[in-house]
Length: 272
Image: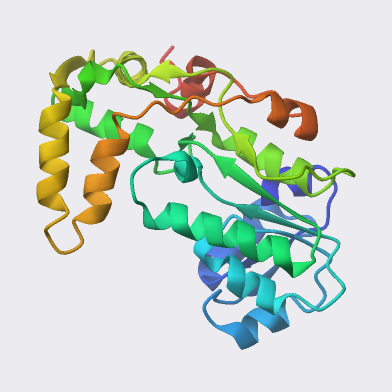
């Protein structure tokens, strides 16, 4: 986000809790980038860091939305852009989905002109995402167990497209009535995604189908364990279709997402 906005001539104030990383970011980008240190869980320093805020873009977890809203200077913010997750569409209980819904509700009653963006599975060269995890597993061994043989749909979105969408959301004149999904141009199956990652790293993948009854049984057992609910939900969501209409993204934000094959080439560049 900082690189994108700074390259576009915008004066950016980067706010985070790690001073070393902030200073490194400012040194790498140069220009007119300003850094401020604050923890989103510490209201007084956060309010001080946001005291002159007019446009705020948050890439933090949706659970921090109430803290951000409380810290904003009253009556002075022209736009707030929050980041959520498409987990809100899952039929399985999920803490993150609950936090995204709470963020949407808090934004709605705040009176601040704002928008909530809901990215799907984010990947990119600098993101430690599911894509990197799959690649690491395939480098160890070629077998990948997937519910329903990997036939469920997923619609990964490149981190650069997420950044472009966030930047556009901060500038558009007409705000949409509700959240906007940020996703790749079209869905693919989990199996296709895994095989594409395997080809990109030169490690052909072998999909091992896991029956849905086994997935549900494993999830039920995990939910009985301390902190097992999150893992159970992640397993069950692998069997859900995650396919979304990106026309609102194109129409409202003017962002045309790149397809997975092109995006994957930026994560694992072909060896010449």
